[in-house]
Length: 171
Image (tube, rainbow, N blue to C red; front, side, top):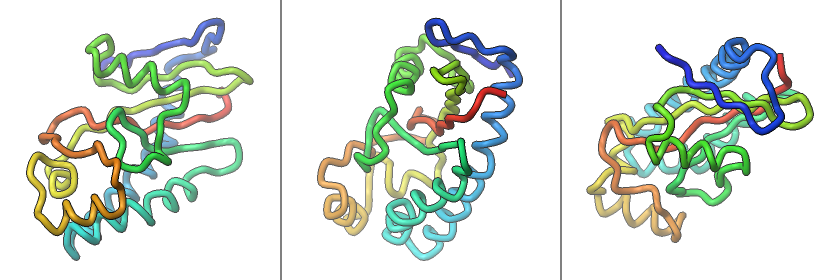
């Protein structure tokens, strides 16, 4: 697998491959725990999965953000405005959307000896109940109730949905 590496202006990474691997290691447990929580929520119905995303996802991200490390999710089409992209993430989202970047993880040097890492999220079939082209009326109503400015619907399986991101001290 080809790993795409981006460096911010004047922010060289001492070892880009090490930075990418560290980012992957940081994000992997977050992805695993989020997927497990969503599967558990979906087993109780899509409306419960919405609650998982609203309540459990921020808690899970916090649990996977030890001292000096921050993790999260963001998108070009937000459901929750609290997940708005950080300033360094926005151009990477734009690169993925425009096709200027392959849908591969990227790491870049940030100010203060930190690294930014992003890993694309592709829509999985289990996501379609709440993010797909057609939603059950009860799901659509619940989303409108909780997220009146929702933009995170209308996806197909395999679509680019956003990114997991991490910020951490340079290795």
